[in-house]
Image (cartoon, rainbow, N blue to C red; front, side):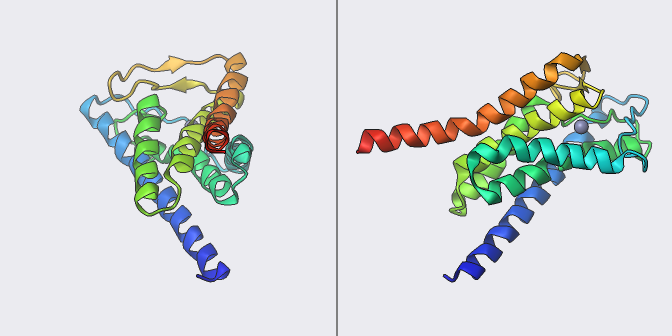
Length: 196
Ligand SMILES: [Zn+2]
């Protein structure tokens, strides 16, 4: 397979994964209809803030993915870092649903498992996709806290309670995000050294 063809295939795969991730985040937010609330709209994407909001999320996601040393995973992380906010759409449209319902550890696990499994089946590197997806969620939390709003429905859908994380927790989330991408690297090194 030529390199150009391979790159095209990889790019399409990253776009497909990012789209599935955004769709899952949106679907996750529909669970909010089971427990209607007055719409909680965070207003993060107001026209004045949109560039910093998107830029900040991409920057944190990309930075956390650098240990993968894989440009495609970095690209995926950059996309995922922003697209989790598809869970704001219903609240922003005025539906009685809390925004940020996908800002949850269970969403992170479900999305990572789904995208990792699809990539494994497609021979596109399941392990790296699994960890980078978990990492992108942690990096997203980090920037949300950093930018001043660390209120997350972290246990949704098991509990629709909102938990507030204070400003000093942003480096903790970021360290977790970086660490998650170091895990598969160390794993790989250990397996290799055992086989040599
Ligand atoms: Zn967010």
